[in-house]
Length: 108
Image 1 (spheres, rainbow, N blue to C red):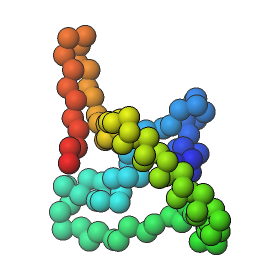
Image 2: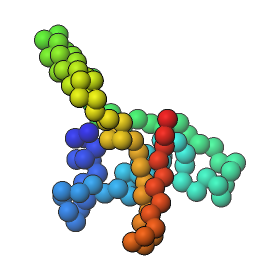
Image 3: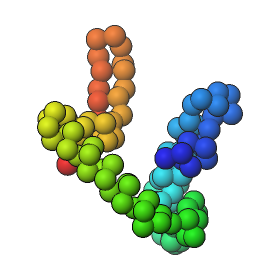
Image 4: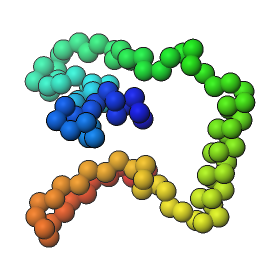
């Protein structure tokens, strides 16, 4: 997540992410821009930009700590019956006016 934030920082405001560039990069994974105008164009396979260092792996002790942490979070979510799915759902909201609001989400 930090790599995404650092990679797409806004030039005008460093506390914000340049969403337009981020969305373009995500769309490049699935298709080529303006493919509808040239449907016979040969699409090359997306080349993954290595963000993570393959040598940067967790030690067994760190893996145990991460596993313990995730289990604690899972227990808290179960005990308090927290609904955390909305935090991970992709939503796009278009505000047309103060009264009208359209939200598009990808529900599973």
